[in-house]
Length: 291
Image (cartoon, rainbow, N blue to C red; front, side, top):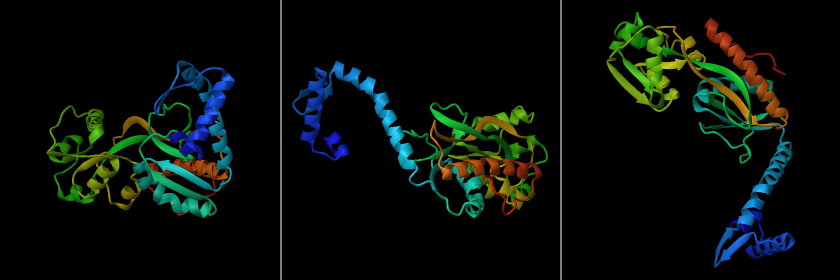
């Protein structure tokens, strides 16, 4: 029944085609018991042999149909990267490429590009993913951040040991980050005044802006808040997380015009933002075209 619905034909038509194939091959591919249908050992071997060819046909079809909309790019992006880095720069992309439409979805999950219509994605991780094209964007380097109000009205933050008088804000699944940062800062052990755990870096940075404590954040992703004075960096000691952001897409897929434009703009813009983060200068309104 599921096969007939997917193929938009009747169940009897599917059954007839399967029977024709079995007669041609001279073997039974399915065991039929009442309404239950299971692959025979011969059927399982045949499926394993033809699956690769069927996958290739599906991939070729996706590549062909993708060229029908060369100016539409469907992108999946890690949420923190999307809200703190990509969205503030979207007007610059639109100004450079007014004819290209980006359709963006926020997601932390990994994609099966053989089973989705998503063209490209921005992943956070170690870059070790199979069967996709992977392009390095930038390392994730963490520094402490807090609100200027916390810095001026709370206990002093003149040396890393002073963090024991403050609430430390953690990403719940990455509690080791604060421990590693303190070790890098030369602090063997502190018992902070309090702790606050949140589910993502996006939320911990927002909590720091609300003077709820001190968080660890990537300096490039928070460059707008730092440059505008919404956040301050009490200690410019950077922790290398050994993870990074990467632009990924289906291996061997030819890029259409929209995908090519977005890829080259993204990588060019990333270089510019890294330079801005190093110099602490506000980003310019526009940049020259990447292509």
